[in-house]
Image (cartoon, rainbow, N blue to C red; front, side):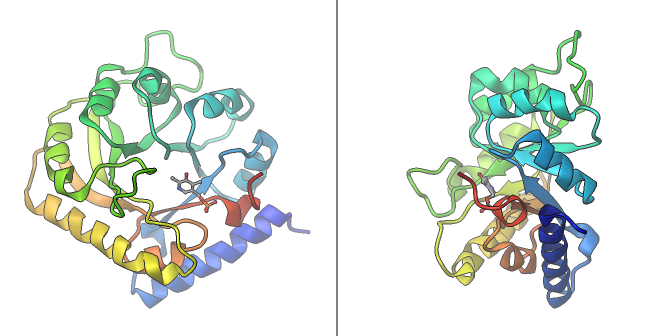
Length: 240
Ligand SMILES: *Cc1c(COP(=O)(O)O)cnc(C)c1O
C-alpha cells in the first residue's frame, strides 16, 4: 500500500502534469520542491522514497538540526526563507540553492563565505558558484521579505558582479487569498520582470528560473511559467 505522503505526491504530480499540458510546457521544465519546514526527518525520508529529490527549508537552524539524519540521501536542498547575515556561512554549507536573496548585503555575505576547508560532511558546492534567486515582494506587503520590483534590476546587476554566486532567476510569494486565480497576475508579473532583467543582458545573470506557486496555487503558477513550485502542506499535511 502506498503511504499517505506517496499518495499526495502522486496526486500533485498528476496536477502538475495537467497544468503543463494546458500551458504547452514540458513536465521536466518544472521542479517540484517539497517544503519540509516543521516536518521531521522520517517523513522527509518517506517523500524521498516516493521519488522526490528537491526539498526546501525556511530556517537555517531547523535545517541544520535535521540534516545529520538525512546525509545519506541524494537531496538538493533549497533555502526558501528570509536569510540573516549571521547565518550566511551555515546556509552556504547546507543549501545548493538560495531562493530568498532580498538585499545586496546578504548576497555579498554569501559570496564571501564559500564553505570552510574543514567542511561538515553535508557541505556542497565547494568552489562552484552558488545558484541564487532574487525574492520579489510583488504585493509590497510589509510583513513579507523580498525587494520591490523597481529595484530588482539594480540588485541583479550588483549580484552579477559577485564571482561566487550565479543569479538564476526570481522568486515570489503573492498575497494569500482564497482563490488561486488571484495569484495569476502576480505570477505573470514575475515572469515579465524576469524578461525585463534578461533583456538588460547583464553579465553573469540569467533569469531562466521562476520559483513561484505553493500548495493552493501551484497549478496557476505552472501555467504562468514557474520552473520551481514550492509545495509543503499538500505533500506533508497541515503544519502545526
Ligand atoms: C511554507 C512555504 C511554502 C509552502 O507552503 P504550503 O502552502 O504549505 O505549500 C512555500 N514557499 C515558502 C516561501 C514557504 O515559506
